Image (cartoon, rainbow, N blue to C red; front, side, top):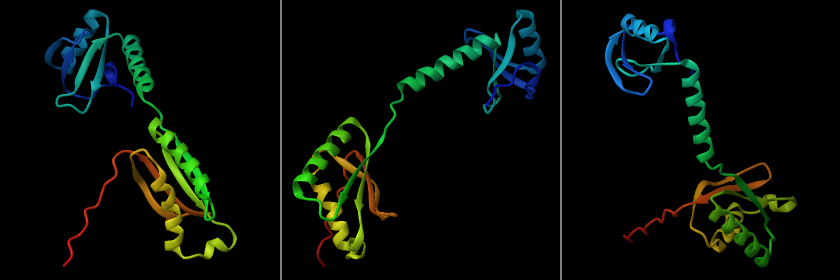
Length: 178
């Protein structure tokens, strides 16, 4: 979204701020424009959705520079989370599962999401679905970090897929016997 500048502003009344951010009050568009011209600066609409819209009297280049600095700072502060993948098969042994769970725990600690894939080939594609989901659950019991299921188990092109991420698991309370 581009800010409207000078004659591009459509509002009849504006809440005007000076370059330092000091409020100058609610002024008509023509008064605000005259004030900006007197100071040799631009009138920039910074918050068009407010009632009345907020405009700032300052140099356009300086305003754009400040905005780009803010965006760079926000971008630097944001940490990108990566989705890592672990692939297992129906016959994956306990020791291999333990190693993969250890790797998954390390990735969870670092804040990554993990996609766990149960790769099915040949005859294993036709095995009972509850059995296959049980094979996928084996690795979940070995992960030492706290995690929550971001995407539940679903059938993919090459098998079953689920995604987990760091967080507290939602524990379901057992239902009382009737």
